[in-house]
Length: 190
Ligand SMILES: [Zn+2]
Image (tube, rainbow, N blue to C red; front, side, top):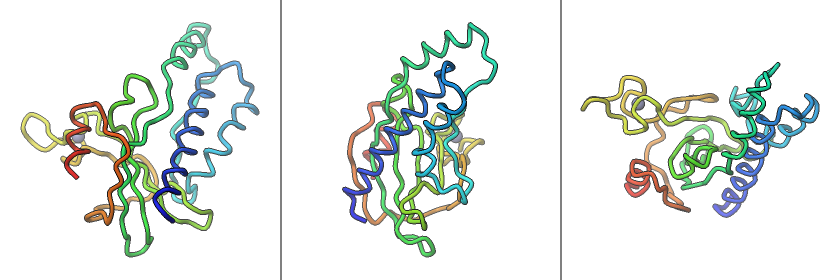
């Protein structure tokens, strides 16, 4: 698979992820309609690797909670793809790590997730998700020492296969620089 195809795959992901987030803040949708908004997105996740979207919506919402959904929905935006790193994995073959922003307008300029993509029997799929460490905000440092939460990596395993260290990437594809200073420093370091 060439890089252009992976970028296109990621564009489909960010659009479906955005639509699913919109649905999660839409209490007026009945369960069937709500579930239907996830069908296409779920196909992009390798379910056998126990990796999932992490998107859900509250049940039995109060009027206040429903009103808050409208506010939250207006804050949503499609995630930004900053870069792709390609790896050669001894067992899984070609792997890609996609660095994406958060799902809200206020965190669209910073790293939020790393999605690891691999070729499965269902095509290219997300096999693992890591999220930016909230404790150290991704710096890996806490009071001058390695962060206790993430062990200094700045990332925490969220779901899916634990891949460990992948070594140096065979290719780095930069698409858009983050505006957040910490994310940008990392982006420019490779
Ligand atoms: Zn940390």
